[in-house]
Amino acid sequence: MLHWIRSETGKSAKSVLHRPVTSTVVPSIPSIFDLAEGVLSADRAALGRAITLVESNHPDHRSLAQELLFELSSSVGPAHRVGITGVPGVGKSTFIETLGKSLTSAGHQVAVLAVDPTSSVSGGSILGDKTRMSSLANDPAAFVRPSPTAGELGGVNRMTRETISLCEAAGFDVVLVETVGVGQSETVVADMVDFFLVLMLPGAGDELQGMKKGILELADMIAVNKADGDNAQRAEAAAREYQMALHLTATASPLWTPPVVTCAGLTGEGVDTLWGHIEQHRRLLSEAGEFQRRREEQRVRWMWSMLDDRLLETLRAHPEVGELLPEMESQVRSDTTTPVKAVDTLIEAFLRR
Figure 1: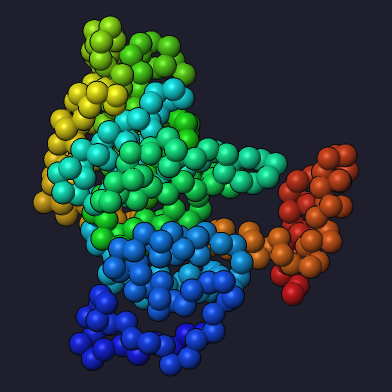
Figure 2 (figure 1 turned 60 degrees about the horizontal axis):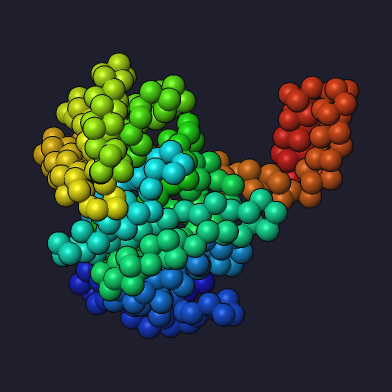
């Protein structure tokens, strides 16, 4: 365990971090002090190593990651967290790169957590977002981090929340979270951001039929992308259809009516107007106190989500449960026991420890 000396001021930033009296560091992992200093000074390499640490499943790494997050917790700034999802082929990456470049040009520090599809065989990332967003990745005011989804619900790495915190501690005031596809699982993303943007294509009819109602209820705004050239008129028509569909759904807040806009990620047309809506949303909710209340509720749900994950992990690691699992699965598969009875047997074995 690392023991930290805090300054008497109690203030957080670089001034509160002093050399640890003793340090037990997992080999190949930089000291928590060095990582914290690096993150606070916006060192991209240190931030990357810190994210790798919080994404690790190694028990020792997890302990170190939590110490790092605790040390940086009071330095986490009020960044604007925006989740972005969309149907396949909608041009999310191009749109995000254009939006990101527009924001950095306006003086913002932008972090993009672009979540890759993960190979179910190797468990590795098969898509490189730094390649897809090469211009933004090379922007000194931006940070692009592709992460494997590891099969997580909503296509978001289970440690994305911690990664957001690290980016905020590093001074990024805008964090964009790109998700994989559109589906009911995207509720996971919406629950960790301040604003949820859904990108759609011109030609609303077919997409509306395939879109789950829950996604429309989550959306703080719908943007019809690729609304340039010959698609301009089709995009406007699609926007009207989406607007009518939104009227039939419940809104997330009585203070905000989700707008439907058109934009073109390739040319940048409409992107500034779109960001203006996002800023207006934060301003309205902040003035009413709802913005802070949402953040507080998200932290509590985050706690329960982590508790669920940790309990399931502990259950699977239990020796007696591990021995019983193959037999219970076999009996359920052959219909010689019920799933409920199998679960009861496993829970009883777990509680006997």
